[in-house]
Image 1 (spheres, rainbow, N blue to C red):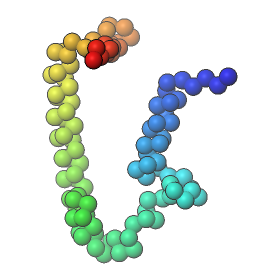
Image 2 (image 1 turned 90 degrees about the vertical axis):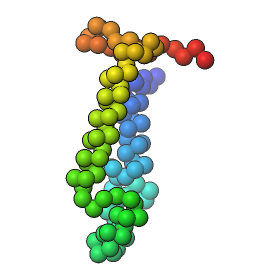
Image 3 (image 1 turned 30 degrees about the vertical axis):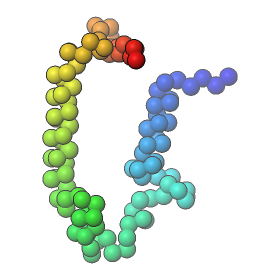
Image 4 (image 1 turned 45 degrees about the horizontal axis):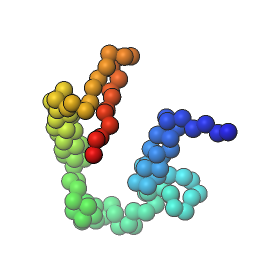
Length: 105
C-alpha cells in the first residue's frame, strides 16, 4: 500500500502550479518547455510594445515595489482581522498552531 502524506500532496500541487505558469520546466517535454524558447523572436527589439501588451512596467523595481505594497496591505489586513475572527484560533502548541472551525453552512 502506498502512503501519501500531506506534505507530498502539497509538493505535487506546487509542482503542478509551477509547471502551468512555466516557472519550472521539463527538458525535452513538449508541453512544459523552457519559457525563453516561447518568446517572440523580436522580443528584445520591441520590448516596450510587448510589456505594454502585458500591462507591465519596463522597470522591474516598479513592479516589485507594487507587489511589496500589495503584500504589506494584505498582511496588515490579516494581522488586524485574525484576532477578531471567531472561526480561527491560534494555540500555544508548538509555537502556535492555527485551527479553523468547520463552516456551519
